[in-house]
Length: 63
Image (cartoon, rainbow, N blue to C red; front, side, top):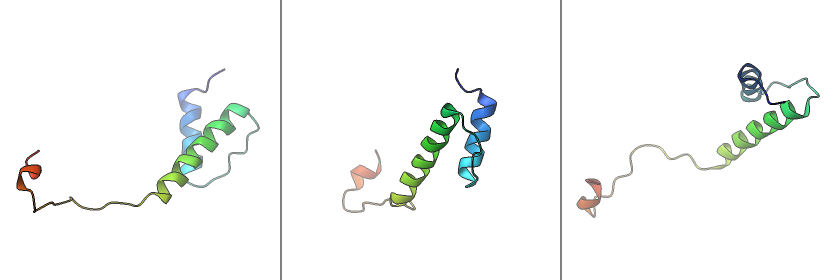
């Protein structure tokens, strides 16, 4: 049985707000852990801010 979109949304909210799931359903736990892992991976990646400018090669800016 797959998860309904409503249940997926509730699990997503719980995962993003650092709440516990409180369920023993294996599908729900797998989805919760998948979201938590993706969030942890995003935290590890460096955050790039702004627009990268390369003033050495102006023809690359137009692309």
